Picture: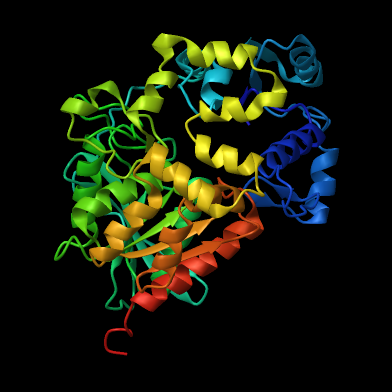
Length: 457
């Protein structure tokens, strides 16, 4: 190998396994969390032999240089950096700072560490020489790939949506008369979905004869930021335009003949879009709809119809300008954690979690007094408009749908066009491999019920 860049690497396979297991346990930290094995990592599952071999792996221990030149970018951890350099000393190692890692890995920020990227580009540029080559994105995107799904084949190709958004269209060889799937990402995940869940679902759906479209909204993944848009925005008006345009690409003859699929904030966007589009259905995974109302809401026609927001009188008490939130968090002791919960965005769910023995009618009353809009009220509006609503939640996420909404949900569950499933093994980000398989199964079962037999079959 001519050159190798190690960007903030683990020093050994054992360290990698330890860090990944810790991340999974943090994700699944709850009383009824499923038991995970040594080979269970976020989004992955290794067999015992692979785990054993990986635990023995150490960088630089193969007895020969791993590459002619090696660049190691490490954080400001002297012991880790020194250990890496010592292990790779025979390879001629260059070192640099892995700056911006905290911002890159922070789920709420995910800022690209351009300084580190520039270091890598300069180092690689110094290793190789040759003429410059210009790259242009093709406008017709003719590439088609056949992907095997069991005994079936799915046809996949990249598509340009409205000459501004990037997407992947997955089409079956034997189509059925069924609504197309349209995957709506949460604002930090590109078109592959969380842990490639959208890829798996799209190909599984193709085996059922159903076409689907995975796309990147403006400023996310491969789609450039539109003029005046916010990268990876959720509460911005333009994102609804993106979804509506993608729906037309997924089902050109009738853009309402689609099923919107979303996770977390993507599920929220799917609800917002469904209120406008009135599609055949929505599949909402761990929907999150607890948002602050921005100050521009009074003049904006953008999203928030589906948001669960506290009434103005309570928002005033929580306004940062008053300084009450900061003072309360600093001065209220842990024994009065209930008071702290009132000042959080998802305060009703937090209170219910702290007081599980209180009756449902009490939370219904609190919701009626303090909440404007809720997922259940949006479900009612969608079902009333003929939209099939299918909700799948982890036990924790279910609390933010069910708390304070027991009478609404009871009425919804007794009607057609609505179903709510709570999967005990499911985690919020669908990092558990077993839970992801179970989630795919229930989603595909429901989707197949919306379809009709194979055309010509």
